[in-house]
Image 1 (cartoon, one colour):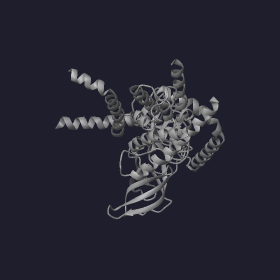
Image 2: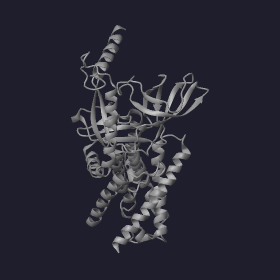
Image 3: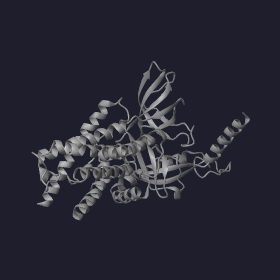
Image 4: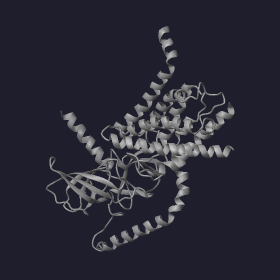
Length: 170
Length: 280
């Protein structure tokens, strides 16, 4: 339990620093803005209380907002994503239930599961984030293109970091 | 009463979700309409020191190009200086900088900057201790860069010119027509000059400078160069695409402009306003 807490706290800081120091300054044009930090929320243990996940997501989003000067946008997106998480977990549950030892990772539940789980939640997160950033529907297609392209980039980075973590463990 | 408690116990997840979402959206909309840059931004000591440490490391990689830029700026200023007539023999010149006693330039380093959002911000390594206050203008050696929004003891956050709410009174160097510069969240190299009447003659390549109407920027600081002129026949104005002279991706060293007469100006305006209201 304490081990789990330490691991997740460490992950929080690692993803936070990667996000605000490296990914924020990637120069891939205005359509591709990956937000890898959401993987921290995705990787919280399956059995974490859903209200706790909501609260952790809120704090994580606010911290990112502080560095991005986006006041509340990432918090809103993360809270929405955390609200959808129990539902997404249930939809993609392998036959019956998750094992007691199952973790929301590529290593534990496999590539197809991770792709659909992360893909769905990343899409919800980016949808809220980019439409709040635009705060208008007049640029609907541009904003939606950002959601899709940035979402694909985020998902790619998530799978890549999952592979790296898996390799490190072996 | 028990009914309410039972409702919250049954729906605690949804209630917490709505509450947290409400808080977040409250921040989003408050910021969008009032520009209230509070404590919770990158000017605070946590975010500021993280960015400062990191830019201290990455700064070394740009030393060469930074030196070249500085030497270019020096050459340009030396040339401008030698082109000035020598007036020291005839008149007493009390000026210490080209703008006389009105403006003071404070040098600053950018420790964080973005260009790919719709609202971009610049974090600077100077704050209250260096005399920075909200509303001061920021210029690079090439042109206008932004406006300070929020200040802490050691850091400040500025609205970049690349911000959807950025507006700046500007004029065409040739002809002197006044307009407004805005950015619409597109390419970081271009902005738009609006409200230039179609009676004016505008050609690509014309320089656009600050008008000096506000207390933020002195007059005649370069903003950009006309790239493309489109007439808007229904509105009698041109829509002018301009190339910004400041390269926001390479921005690192800037000057914060403090207008020493600003207090005098605003005090006078306030006094006039008060006197007018008392008279009524």
